[in-house]
Image 1 (cartoon, rainbow over the protein chains, first blue to last red):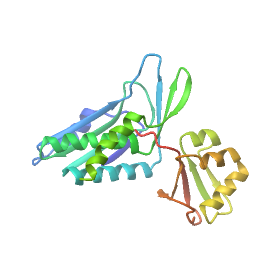
Image 2: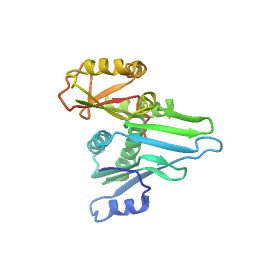
Image 3: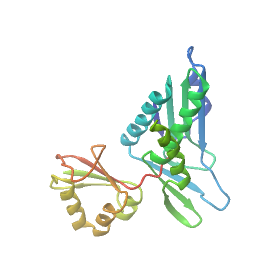
Image 4: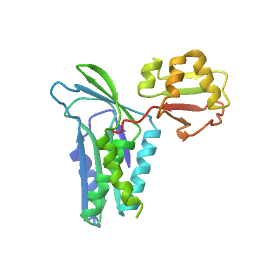
Length: 151
Length: 81
């Protein structure tokens, strides 16, 4: 499941909802991304999505992760709009029979979200506003999965 | 009529987010020609590196056919989440 929200969300409540009623799940892994404030750096962040299109692309990443890692379930909650430092931006939840699959799928989904998800990110800092594109680190991170896709 | 949506820096270049173009262009190239007549700087940006087009929320390549009322989105390189 994928949910985009313009409002802040409660990661603990989302984790509890995701975990509730599971009797055959041995592992739930989670990743929470937080808007980072750096001294003198970006003072505000704005994420733009293309409603409908963005959800469909992320839903496709989730489907791929479910098949690739044999997950029982996965969920992504992502903020859009203006996001103040310290607020949660993204929560990824994965459920599997065992921990390795849950951890790896969570890592995989975050790498896809950071480099392939249809978001446009604007940072407002002391030097003005600028549009951000994926960093070389983000692109290197996603390459890790490409190598193993061949095998 | 074709409905055009702009995202990211394209929106800043154009100064708008959404606009309708009449009469309905039958191809993406015809729509881009209409945009060029209205705003050459925007048209150049649409042809810039990494800009993708989506028709009715599906990515297209080349000179896609547009049906009347089509929603055409121009997507600059994605930032990721």
